[in-house]
Amino acid sequence: NFFDNYNQIRDKVIHKLLDIPKGSLILSSASSLSNIVGHRIFQIRKDITFLDVGTSINDLLSLDKITRSYHVTYFSKGLKPFLRKLRPSFYIRW
Image 1: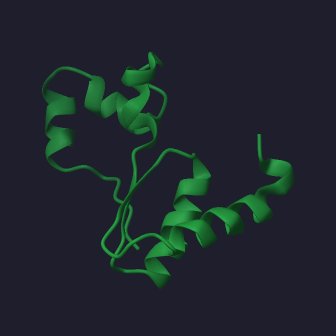
Image 2 (image 1 turned 120 degrees about the vertical axis):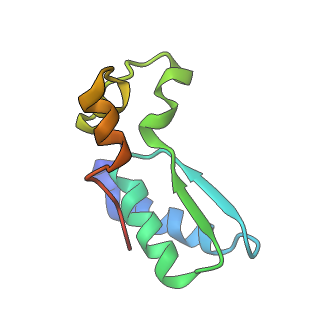
Image 3 (image 1 turned 90 degrees about the vertical axis):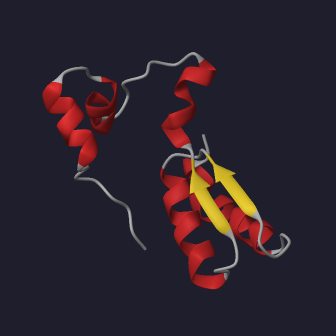
């Protein structure tokens, strides 16, 4: 639980990541912190690829598969979920 020191932790993580080698790949699973850090890294170092793997690794950690609303689409079976997979309505763009 880092919420008491959120700003300090965020800045420390960003500072460390800015020093990684050119063209690096960052895999992150840090909830909302991933969004903030990913955006800041992208603003400063466009040579770094930042992937928020987040809940996509739930099954590897033996967690429930459906923990987010968009999981319902991807883990549901039938024609309607299949059609939604072809045209997702959720995108994150920076």
